[in-house]
Length: 247
Length: 218
Image 1 (tube, each protein chain N blue to C red):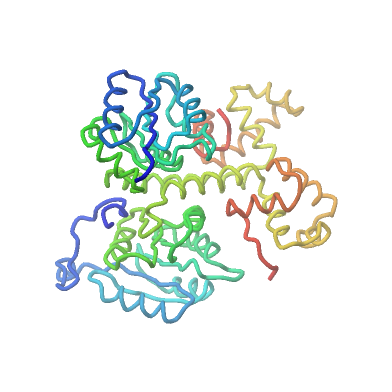
Image 2 (cartoon, rainbow over the protein chains, first blue to last red):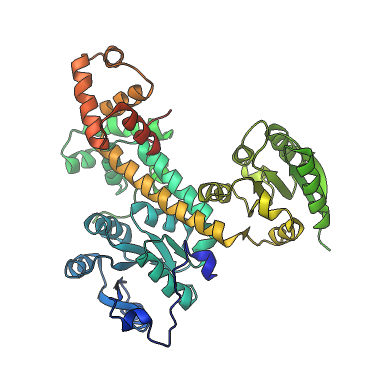
């Protein structure tokens, strides 16, 4: 699977058992930061990555807030950040990837999942990930994926590699829905996804109720749907909003 | 024993059509139709419901992609193998997104075609590793473009979007003003803001960038 899942071949596949030449010459190892909510998974990833030639774990975190703090303290021009898609809550994995993309444009961000749906991968790439590593991947390909990301490659490793077409379709769908709406309309839709009434949306956004209903009507028109439920389903399916409870 | 595989072969050139038919037969499939144009291929898929489609992407009347995008899921053959003169990541990605299971180039892939057809029929994806890598790279580019497009789109006001579209349509400042019921001076202000948000200096750059990002229709 290795060759198929890599965007480009790295110059020299490093052996796991011997110290690579690059390290002997004192070349900096590639820094990695692991963000996963499950302590046991995180510990396993950290140990595995640290044991791999040319890679060094510079930090780890179990939540989005923690991750931002850890990364602020990390030095290095290009660090590979692994973000588990299982991060949930208000600041979920998509939020974190978007935030990290903005704050650390030079770093590589890889989504991390297990047997992930193509639409999860699409959404991760759309919000700023440079690739996706599936935990259900051969170890060697997984580590190769991290190295590839360090070399500025796009990486899709594991079962998701068989779905690049569907992943692309998902991005295209998200794009076409997203581009039709203005920023304000997207804000309205995001708040509407929490299940609020027009009046509650108005209060939240500090506008009049009438303005909200006008926005909603225009959104329905642009998306070609007749009601709020249909609009939200379309937006959720394209990854434009997350449907869930209010904070 | 499984039912015989019913195949449709679509190619513009008669020689290529012959080669594809022979390859299908060698792979154990029965060729129920050999079509020359996209329109005929779409019709044939709808009426014959083949289980295999071997499709030349360079058809005389239209892009072979149109065949795949025109077919509803129910009319789309279970196995689609596409052939093309060209191989680049964007095309491979597009073909895969439209349900193709195998992508081969005419230069490289014709010799081993019966084997490729057999593997595709058994559910395997058959794409040269280098091509698949190109497709992943194209995926990365596509995601970056989509993200950038949305960021710019979020910055533009509705009025600025209208002005941008009219600029793309080749209207003058005066015409845009008349169309939108505002003064040419106001149009110029909008245009300046649009340029700044797109990070460009000229109309040509603006149109080209906006089209790349999918903000306007050409």
